[in-house]
Length: 241
Image 1: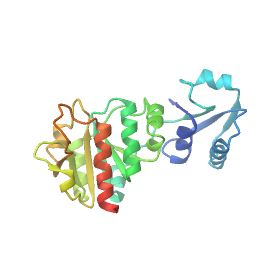
Image 2 (image 1 turned 90 degrees about the horizontal axis):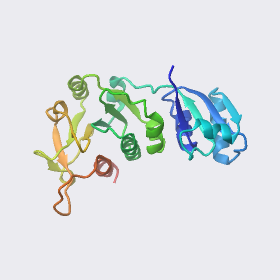
Image 3 (image 1 turned 90 degrees about the vertical axis):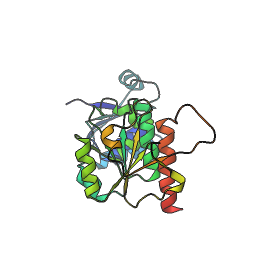
């Protein structure tokens, strides 16, 4: 079984507490005794996760970078949730397409998690290969957000709609300004990457397109990371403030 090395307190804590993957071992600097580390190790011990104290030199040799802070976690592959579970419980889901950079992907997940998103729908690809990078870029949010893989996007969208979830696309064609639009109670917000945008399967199934108004004429759209923050927190504002 392939494993993945999570580095640093935030990522390791998220892996331990998120419950989205098996944590096979925690590796800690033998001299690391700060409060946060002690808390993480205590929670790991409660869950029966093996803890190994070792030298900083061994940790440096195992880690890919120098910002691990003396704490690593050897983890298994991510567990994805069934679509039915997300559709049944979620009021605010997000569908992400065309995001290739793991740092950008992680930052989008961080934004969605902070805004109250209940789960994420993803197209098929090897999302686990950069798991440690995504965990760090998302400040651990990737390990707390429920995610499902849409093996067939049209079938997935149809299943969401059967559960009363509207598909709202971040797309300027025939769109309404997001500040003049009342988001439905249950929705899936579709966000595409800057290069390819959303697929035809998603765009053709949209119940409503929405756009972000700009303060001046600009040649390029906002990045997917920035746009996701604007959309997600407008949804939060409408629901809570």
